[in-house]
Amino acid sequence: MFISIILTLYFDYIYNLFYSLVLPPTDSFTLLGAIYDMDQATLKKRVEELTGMFELGDLLKTPVRKLSLGQRIRCEVAASLLHSPDILFLDEPTIGLDVVVKHKIRELILRMNREQGTTIFLTSHDTGDVEQVCRRAIVIDHGVIILDQPVKKLKYDYLNRKIIAVRFDAEQHLRVPEGVVLEKAGKMGARLSVDTRICPIDEAMRWIISQGGVADLTVEDPPMEEIISTIFTGRPAAG
Amino acid sequence: MKSIRKYFIVLRISLQNAFVYRSNAIGGLLFYTLFIFVFFNLWRAIYQGGEVAGYTLAQMVWYLCITELIVFGCKTGVFNQMNEDVKSGSIAYQLNRPYSYILYQFSNALGSMVFNLLLYGALAIVLGLAIVGPIPGFRLSFLPLGLFSAALGMIINFFLMMTLGLTAFRLEENTAFFWIYQKLVFMLGMFIPLEFLPGWLQNIALCLPFSYVAWAPARLIVAFRWDLFWQVVPMQLLWAAVSVILSAGMYRYGVRGIQAHGG
Image (cartoon, rainbow over all chains, first blue to last red; front, side):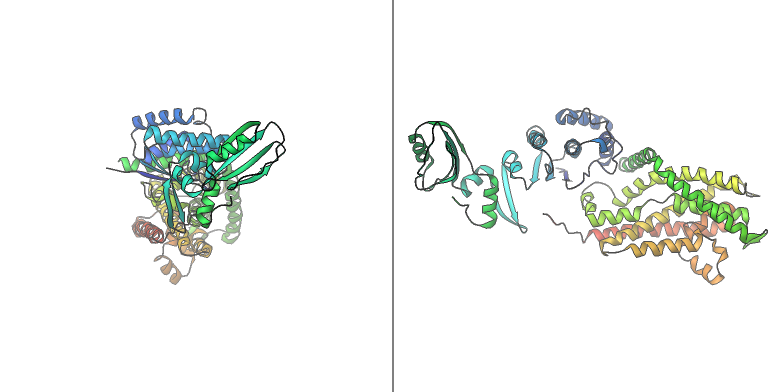
């Protein structure tokens, strides 16, 4: 089985849209179609599909130099999928993008995987990418794989901690039980870090409720940055 | 045919790109005109009538128009492009693409070369006719042969510059090679015909590629002779092949040593 792989890199420039900042993305698509020996009919169909998926309609005829970074990246990722690769390497595809565009790109990546069946290797320093997009995480340190796990298991295994944000109806002076750390306290609210090895989460919840007057409660996993930091430093996070 | 088609598409897009940026050529065209004007006056002062080393003044001016057209007008920046591609690491991103990097770069450059050849070629004709008029005895029927030689000269120039640019794989600083190459091309045919040089230097030059970039085509166009054609064109073909092999070899040699560093 022929496996096509494309390496797509996003550092401080965009490469799939080639050297031409004057000509529009449609010319790059034509060029890439020729490079990958695609016939005209297949190329046309593929461009239409990708234009719909990535919402490129207005962008196709716009010179690349007039596109914003987020627009270019959308065109870039679409260009990298033109010849339907089986495997796609994306190196920091959301770097430098604002939160709205990041979200869009992440959605598109998930969609590529779901609808096209494309296997995606995503490298990123943005743990949001890992959390929201990836099913499996591989951590590499100095060329050595030090972790290879599903992302859900990663959180469960590496940090036995939950973050609880609570807001009360009235002012509270909290005396936290063992295993719970008061990270931040306001007059009527608090942010608590619960070490679930010492204080199981149900106990922590019961304690909070017993304080009375709970107006709002949020339970979260610790940020992915902490998990990654723990993996690299080999030290469990405080809490 | 499918696999060659991609290079024609690259050429087409490069040509389109050159056309869109056509206003960038204005500076170059002005410089070219200035250069021809200055050296026409220089040669007019030197000549004082008659011939020098077998060239009349008219032939000399047309000679300069043609050598400048080939070397200056049709320059591509391939040396800097290679340097940048290697030093920035972007050459690595092209390794997995299903095309020849060398041919891709050539197709890319060919677009701008064709555009510049037409633009500067038109200017060369206008300047030549305006300054000295047509060359007496010039026969249009020999022009295609001269243009064929010019094409070979541009190929030699391109691939040798590419080879020098690709030394960036191994050398931190390689601009000296660029300057040395430029000066050799300049002195061995671009600025003055080979015939103006001492005999021993002519013999050495005829064994090297530099004079086949500019001198050979310019000489054939301004004063065509069949014996000269059969003398220089085979050498141009040989040096064109050598320069292509050198650039391909330098690329393969360099690519083997590529190391990717993440971060």
